[in-house]
Image (cartoon, rainbow, N blue to C red; front, side):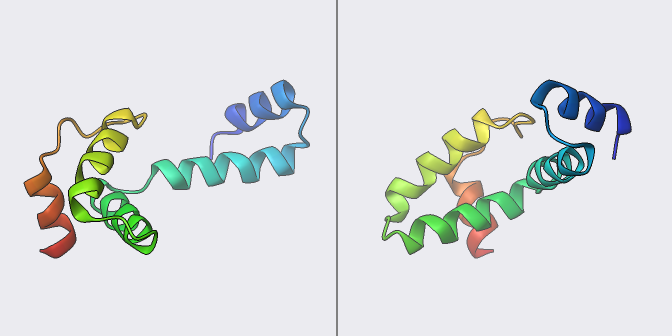
Length: 85
């Protein structure tokens, strides 16, 4: 973990450095998720909320496009392949 980033987060938020380090670690882990892991996780979460696939695929595609490190355009076909193989 980057100590300069931890110090920056601590200084700009008023958090203690150990707390800032945990926040940075959580954010890095969240964005460290691969595209495949993200798609599978979001598909499970949305299905658990009784969403249908015809609603899920466009939503996941939009969420992917908005991520900090977006994977580029991902077709619904590719999303289905990630989830179902």
